[in-house]
Amino acid sequence: MFVYSGDVFPSDTRNASAEKDTECDTPRIRGSSNLVRSTSIPSLKLFSDGARLKPAQTPVTPRHSKPIKRFVSEANLHKPATTPDCYTNVHLETPRIKLEPDDEVISLREETSNLTVGVRVRPLNAKETAGSGVTSVVAVDGSEVKVMCDSGVEHSFTYDHCFWSCDPQHPQFGSQEVVFTTMMQPLIDKAFQGYNTSLFAYGQTGSGKSYSMMGPDVGQEVGIIPRFCQELFDRIASLDDSTVSCSRSVSESACVEVSYFEIYNEKIHDLLAEASDGGKRPPLKVREHPQLGPYVVDLSVHSVSSYKDIQSWLTIGNSQRATAATGMNEKSSRSHSIFSVVLTQTQEEMLNDEQHKLSRRSRVNLVDLAGSERLSQTCASGKRLREGVSINRSLLTLGKVIAALANNSNSKRKVFVPYRDSVLTWLLRESLGGNSRTAMLATISPANIHIDETLATLRYACQARTIVNRVRVNEDPHERLIRELRAEVERLRLVHDDHEKQEEVGSLHKRLIASNKLVAELTEELQKAKHEMQETEENLVSSKLNYEQQVKQLQDSLEQQRAALEEMQRYKSQLEIHEANQLCKQLNINIELQQNQHEGVMVHDLEKRRVLHWKTSTFFQWLQQLRDYTP
Ligand code: ADP
Ligand code: MG
Image (cartoon, rainbow, N blue to C red; front, top):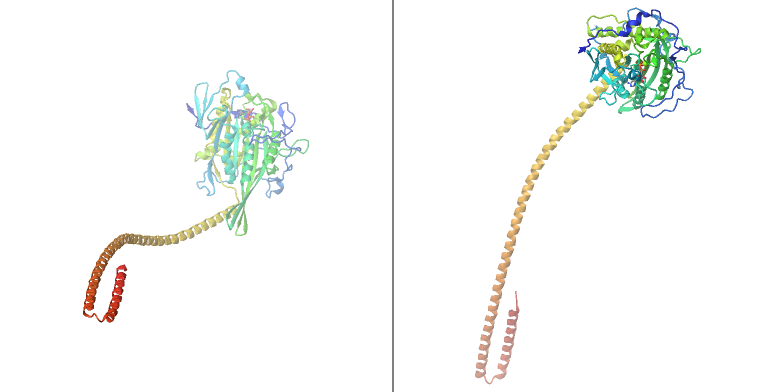
């Protein structure tokens, strides 16, 4: 097995020296036999839900048919241009507006960011499938891409992400959505944090760069750029007003500006500008601003407010791109296209009735490079050949720049980075080796007939993976200072609130302890009281029992006493009757005696007897009453 270690230049550079002169006209605009330039705008469709969009209304140009703003034009530049036009290669030292890689001290504001590389293998096309002896020699295994040469040597390369787009059933099948999610979503996240981001599609002609970046105009298969635009506006829509505290409210808004240009034969063409005289647009120039770095003079920049707006501009730009049929691709892009979005996020903060504005600006560059050409394979001649040479020159320089940046990232011995050797590298200097989080999507064909190009692309991508950029959030230093101070104030306020809360919690804690103590005491007392109550209850129960017993005893004794009394009464009455009878007998005896002794004194005796009778009957009455008496 052969594992690539890294310092081989792309093989497609072999024709770069074939052409020394550079053309200044725009040959692509007028009819070459197989040059395709579309003037009508195809119908648009939304990809998110697969629903078709209505065809663009006529006129087809977006709402802002005129650019609302020029990025930096000569008129508003304070300083005169210091660099020559784009189509003259300038071999000057690149001015350094960022930290040199050999500086040991990295600014506190800067972070390092490795270039992320993904490799996508497209399916065999109809021509390859039909060709005899064409086989697939590429395999993907996790983060490894393996290429099996005819000689039996296996080359193995490791990347951040690998996408196998040949077979939907494959576990690592890389659909358009998967590629977008993996490669672009992290960059979008960073863009919303205020970082510059870039994504390059690099690969052989016909390997799927444009398919991955732009995709078909319609349906679920749309590429990274339209998906990015949709995601951009979805996220912007979700930015809303929020109130952090009663004294502080924050509202966020975002503004999006787009530009779209291509570098064709080392000349820059604005794809969104209106043609002035009969469809021929003059090529634009590149200048270098002391602070902003390289820029395209008079490039149109358009403000967009919705996905539909941006899609219209994309359609216009795509229709202006220079494409041509080559031996390898029916509709080969003959230029490098750069779709650039500037996202400005403004945060308005109301703090104690004072308004503060903070803004962050991030540039997102989406670059669809022209195919790395092997002139023998593309069967190019004449104009196509010249285009191919130009394309190769840019890619040769890109290769040199990547090699130099990779060297500088990995070794102490720094080498010169030849950004200015091509317009492409000069313009994308920041994306390649500066303040940008960058990703590269390398596209390859699995066919054995393209094995050399495939290996060249894979080595190129391997080298790019070692580049380390230094990135920072793009915001005004004063605004940043204010933001940081405000954040510090907010932090201190929170600490203070926390402290107060802690104090409050402390006092509450003390009170809680006291309450707990009280509760414990009361509980103890309650237990005591309960205990006492229980005892009292028990006493009561026993007292009740005693009382009942006593009552019963009393009742019994009363009953006995009553019986005794009755007995006594009975006895008494018998005794009284007996006494009365005795008395009567005695009386009768006396009466008879008196009758015998005093026969003559009848009247007097009669009277006495009457009295005695009265006394006797009274006595019997009393006796009867006494008998009837019941106590
Ligand atoms: P490049 O831009 O690299 O020259 P293109 O993107 O134009 O190549 O792709 C060439 C052809 O291959 C197109 O017809 C495209 O539809 C097809 N193609 C490329 N990649 C894929 C893929 N992943 N799945 C299906 N078809 C693809
Ligand atoms: Mg293309």
